[in-house]
Length: 314
Ligand code: UT7
Image 1 (cartoon, rainbow, N blue to C red):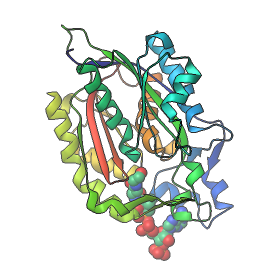
Image 2 (image 1 turned 60 degrees about the vertical axis):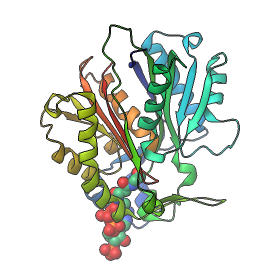
Image 3 (image 1 turned 30 degrees about the vertical axis):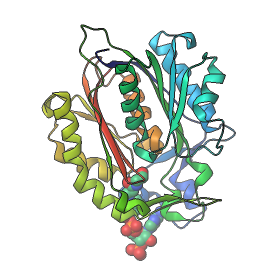
């Protein structure tokens, strides 16, 4: 196999919108602080939907957009850090919901970098001949892990899912998924935590902020170099949606003045592993990135972990 390419994206968000003014009713915060310091105006909060429900809805849309059926899929990979159940995993639940027969099915948890990690493993599986058509999904219900009395975290997170259909590239076709750059900073593993038996999200915000704005731009540029794409040719930059100031800080250091920079954080907040596919799916739906154009994905967060790659927009 020569590599893989993405056929289509799809996404799902719960209908309930939580505004900054809504949050100001329950903790000591205000719209101006949240917009200035984080860049969020609204986030979506799931009601009865589970992580698997949202993953399944996003996957159904991605399949429909790809023109494939469940019978075509032989691998399902779900990136998530907020699935409550230990077994079955979310990938098997998605396969059951969609009626996918006997796929390889696994979940992967690298928190907010999860989608790019998952896409990397799927690209490798396709290159190795272990899969032909795969669903790669990022899905989170972070509201299950939110401490609604802690203003430093409850204003940040949201729920949702994004999915991609990835297929084997033809032998004479250039790969549409570039080499993944991935890694971690285990000595900073306490910087983002969802720990214990009744876990809540906690983080050392300033520590993560400093790391993200200083260490990540050179790593994102490595992903371009490995893909053989000059930074000035990148059509869109889709980083993890953690903080609008982090996104701007990294984007400034990349030297991609023409690139569309995803800012779905404004509408959706931080949806961890879902944020990258959700943001790109929406850019594609709004026709803001042309088909075939190179797009730089870059996830980062809990672990600390990071991963990114250049993909061709479906
Ligand atoms: O996705 C996982 C990876 N995580 C990240 O990438 C997070 C990176 N970090 C960040 O995005 C930012 O550090 C935060 C958004 C988490 C926090 O913003 P900050 O500008 O670093 O604020 P801070 O924690 O330094 O707090 C500044 C002040 C404090 O008050 P004092 O001590 O200066 O009086 C906080 O108590 O802002 C206060 N504050 C708030 N005020 C109003 C904290 N949260 C709020 C709030 N509303 N919601």
